[in-house]
Length: 196
Image (cartoon, rainbow, N blue to C red):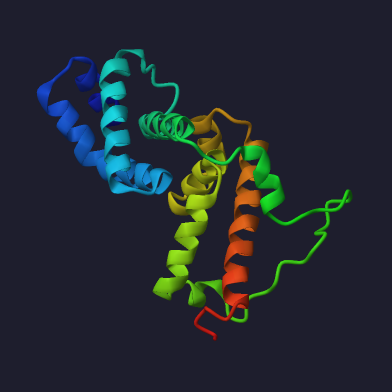
């Protein structure tokens, strides 16, 4: 089925782009929204990405899955747009999360939550805090987190989409999780969470 769609897109058939949007549009928009944080920005990213798909479909050689190729275009388009905006330098991210000793142990323990995270995150306010934390992640960490935790993609697919080694994907995902855990731990430790 994907091969037929790709061939129809390459022939520039009128219904092919509609089928592409019907099959993949929601997924691509969801990723753009998670990366950009605002609907208008996500819509712009999606529109720009779809234009790139149309312009570059002839170069698609089928070595990667169509969905991987589409993800890559959307993520790269979003990251390029985010880089153009003024954001905190990524070097500062290492100082924002937990600190480690030379042996790789925590220099300062992250506080444990009183309840399992699944129960706490059911609360709307906690979900809002998580979303704010995701938005504070540097772009490349946010892209890895969104693709792994929200889109549930395997590491090798994320690595292909972002053109990174699998080890780098795992490291960035781990750091993003630690950062988000610290954000939520601070929130709940301040007595603002459901257990307060």
